[in-house]
Image (tube, helix red, strand yellow):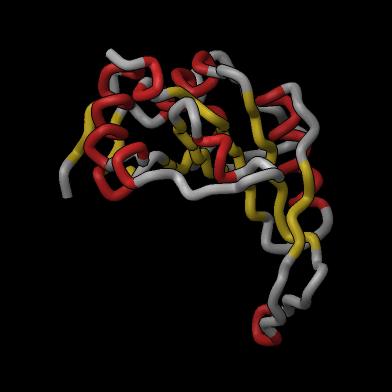
Length: 168
């Protein structure tokens, strides 16, 4: 197989939407830090929604992005949902899923000060050469034939993580 066609994991993003600043957000930050051993970042709102009491610049969530291969973490997170993904959770070069309770993750125990919280996981895939769309000099688009299709993403997930894909 051509080295440039090899698919690999670019990043894993874990996200908790607390909906409000305060204790719930701080608990989410602690959980993300314990799960990943990385410092999470607070996410801020962009829009004003008066009925929800949301205004621009309000901190309502937390996220952490993990780069470098973190395959063991993905395997644990997929095991917590039974190694099953719906076909609607897979896109071109990405797959994402939610975990309702962090205590479902194998090897992770209940923490009384945090309580029960769920979060979302998004995994982004890439091929060698994807850097050309992000570099600062001579930025270019990725050619269509080099993009990762939904079928290739499904094959990657099946082969690398022993995950069953449920058609919907």
